[in-house]
Image (cartoon, rainbow, N blue to C red; front, side, top):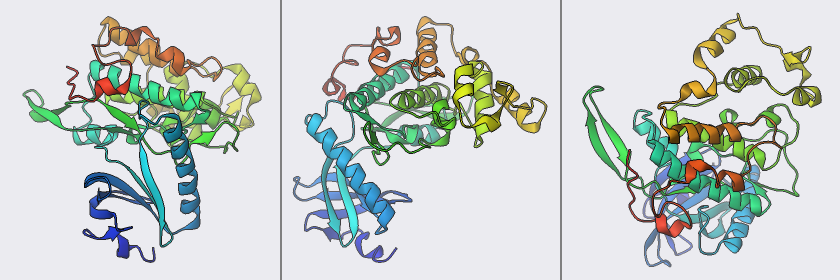
Length: 356
């Protein structure tokens, strides 16, 4: 990308304000740098620098539009969406500065050998995600790209314990305070809804079947995310629509006939049922790697059963019957949360260790 190297070296200063310290991450859109913001008293911020390419610049403009709406509706940052501080155009590169956050919930999991989060940690993260995304829905927005990579810890410091059986160090994050990030695909209710949204594994059935989508597609994604936190692996590990639907049927039961009747994607069905060969190698893969949802329970304890009841409501095929986030927040799974885990985000900022 032309001019790229000019603005990404440590020590460079942009806008006589942002001093680059290091790279936080890279993506197709550009890169995110850790910077000292000399107009915020030397505070460290994350600066997202977009490639000087029209399609990425346009996406950045749309993201800025959403972030400005979020700032306007939530000036005190109570609803746990990442805060944008500033944006500017630097020689054709759109730049957005954000509060500095820590590792994503995915990266922490990966660096911890995919050891799942404890039920108490999952409960706290789940509550915050539901709160943040409900705020978006209340403001006529659908995120459309919820996944563990887009849920970031405010602070990912951890304690280490040695697991004798597995002969390895295991990390426990000290504070499960999180933020929702990446509003590059967020869509207002009145805007054009593109046919396909979401990263494959978190994609709702109405999106795959091209039946149109709205807020409920985020709820489906949240159900998939929570399963992944609880077990340490992806619920729908596939790259193919037909196989994805077969996995859904194995885990959640048959696709409703109404959805089969209405879809334009009739090629996936035959005589009102999923056209799927159980005996093929894919059929064998699905049979061996997927089982009915409740068979993934790690404990018979009541909170584990309540958790599965919650994700079952989120993984309802019919978007109109799927649990809404206002109802999710009232679910019994969240009733016994420890003091300071519910309500506004400010009570969460402390270094809470939600015990395993």
